[in-house]
Length: 244
Ligand code: GLP
Image (cartoon, rainbow, N blue to C red; front, side, top):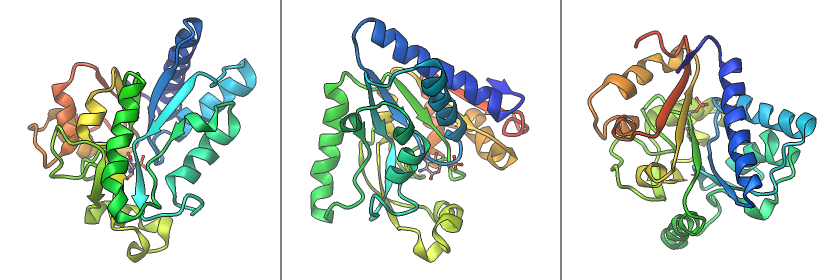
């Protein structure tokens, strides 16, 4: 779906998220959201905060799983995704913080594999993710599933691609400060979501959007795996769509 601008598109996505939360509320059920970081979902979170403050949307029945986190990183570091999510969403709504799950960037290396299995298990225990929000990196990554990621991959420690680290360098004050690794949900984890929405705005994303939507399915561009699923929508603006 191509929108004229990212604001109207983000408002529409936020409405869909709110609709899911409310329909679950009506049945006394939990809404399980898979959430992304980066610039792409910022306006969606802003609109969700507005819906909470001005229209009484409650997040009491919401459980969230974030896609990824740098490794290593402290949760209070400026660039941590824990901090990002608090600042953009969680600090401004009535979510029970014990329902928030974000990969832990402070683990000891030897504890990561067991932690990742438990993260997958926890998602499964909730019956899976109802709605997964995704951004896309210029390498074609979703979450931090860089080129080479397998379609059935699970939550795991990965090595960040050089382009990804360059794109993150302004947040860290230089590429040398960007962590070399990250913990990410796998492509297989993402695929298990009942509904997936990928967001992309502006012309910088146009080449990778073309590859993701029209290119051959290949682990060289992990987002192309989304072509294999029926429950995926790309919600993009006109600038990200110019090469389609
Ligand atoms: C980061 C995140 C991804 C995100 C991507 C795009 O690397 N780990 O989950 O989708 O970058 O970011 P942005 O939305 O800022 O373009």
